[in-house]
Length: 120
Image (cartoon, rainbow, N blue to C red; front, side):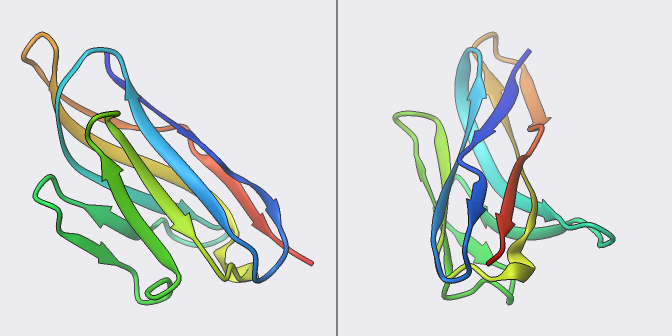
């Protein structure tokens, strides 16, 4: 079973940067669209950034110009570079995605999330 694993969260001060990583574990044949969401306390889960297999990216208005998503298909890894972080960026960041596994079956998965805290 393919599972997504995130890493890279932590506690930073406003204005600082963090890079999150997301990769599926297990045998992967292909990786389709991947996306980062965030869940802040008391708020609905929101889509932060997405990256299709064709290279198209999209961002929430609140992070445009500060966040960047890209993928390294040689490592089956998606990254989210977060610059100029603000306290309102605090939350659990979750990665989701899908594709075809090594057995030729479709997989879709969510990670457990990585906590990002932006505070002075």
